[in-house]
Length: 228
Image 1 (cartoon, rainbow, N blue to C red):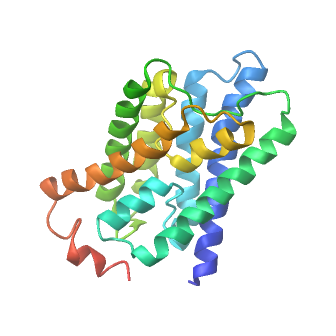
Image 2: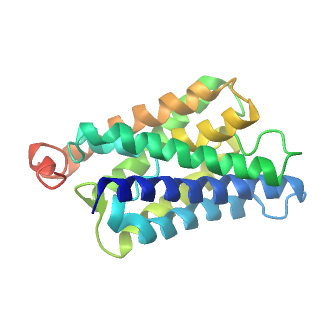
């Protein structure tokens, strides 16, 4: 598979994630809560599940800069390919937020993530949520790609669960691209640093947990052999 196809898959997959997920937030707001908190959480989980099945065989369906960085830290993804992946994810997310801005120009935040309480509370919560998500991804993947038909279900379920749990407090972003795009397009930049920093810290921390629980092929030199 050519590198351009992989980058296109990451761009489109992240576009779909942000368009559907933050779109559910926007539509919930403009319709007075018709979608509901549970509906938003399920939407995020389902779109990730769908994109894993749709583009997972092409690019691995990272759809998240923190996941790409986590795979690099686990030595499952080459460093030289990380920046193009992250750039593609951010472009896809920005295109999704721009589309939502055109469709719903009256909406102020476009689904941007904001802390409910103290910023440090959301920082820690986002880091823990991402660590849990990344641990599941590492556990159900081979190299930097998901393995088997249940991988999408596992990852999508964790995202839906964490969004239901922590969405009202931190936004349950777990994804720098998902938070960056609506914040930039809507110019809601005050607490963006939380959602850029915490997922990366959480993803990196999950690699250490993975090494403690799984064998050395999980995250180490042997793992790198399968991602070249």
